[in-house]
Length: 451
Image (cartoon, rainbow, N blue to C red):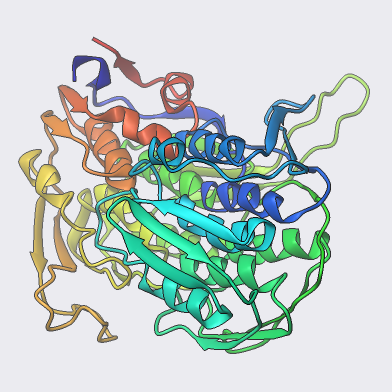
């Protein structure tokens, strides 16, 4: 445990400039999509994070040759020799990521069968794969559950279907897209997720030769095709990481410019950020010219001084306030005057991280009731999914243990904002979704070190 700890000397505002690369929630799915092509694919701006390494390893086990391209952050995928991987080999990755479930459709198309190990990911709620399995069965797949995982086959091939999700799940929508593009006939998916990362995945599949229509009211129609080819794609930037650094700037009373951040995908966050009292400026890209190397565009976030304002917000699927945004922002809300209310409607166990903030001096109460305008699926189900944050609170240093990825970054922000020296355990979990976060902290003037 001692190598997985970061010593944080808090109380210093973060100041400076960092850059975000391709979105974690898109890049790994784009890598899986390369399995469907019969020619190589090229993906740019890939962050160096653990989820990417897991998917790269799984692709390699299935015969996809993955190599680094000539540009920093470029990966090339050659799927010409896709093959079955042994159960033992795949099980090495069991519990390390939830991405393997998305291999089902592509492997069924390429090999006629698939094996999926026990799934991992962050412990923020059960996140059952029932939606995924139900969709796969609708396409004609047979699913056999065994102690080591799931064995899938498609004895009669995969066929288009009409399917409605009980909840607009991002993962299940990705599953349907990756399966439907080469299923025989037309698939209609209702109540689909329409997050920017979903739309970007659709763009990739369309580049590969897929025929996909996005209708109004969360309806996606996919016309199956017999073959797909490779793609060349630069993914949308990571709006979760961008918002995390924005929250860190606000909580530490600092000033951080996030190169690569895009306004269009962050509009809901930016509205709340401004309502809390934070300031931001969208900076346009400056093309290179003689004597000027140019600069990438982004968004500058800063604390303008004075007091922050309490707000009430509810997380929701896109275009609502993203669930991954609330944890970093709540740290900043501990510094706002008055009572802030957060109603979490996406994951039922995503407020557990507030206990650690309370040990640092925050005043956060969690409730089972729906403290928002919209009753949600967790109401009356005994889940503590609403929080009331009373502020401002003076945060002090503490020893913290990171429970999951986004909560981990929130704990890190709290340690940076607190007075004194904190020890944050389990920080390597942050590497799942934040590229080079320690180097970026150093670039922003934070005083952190490994013991």
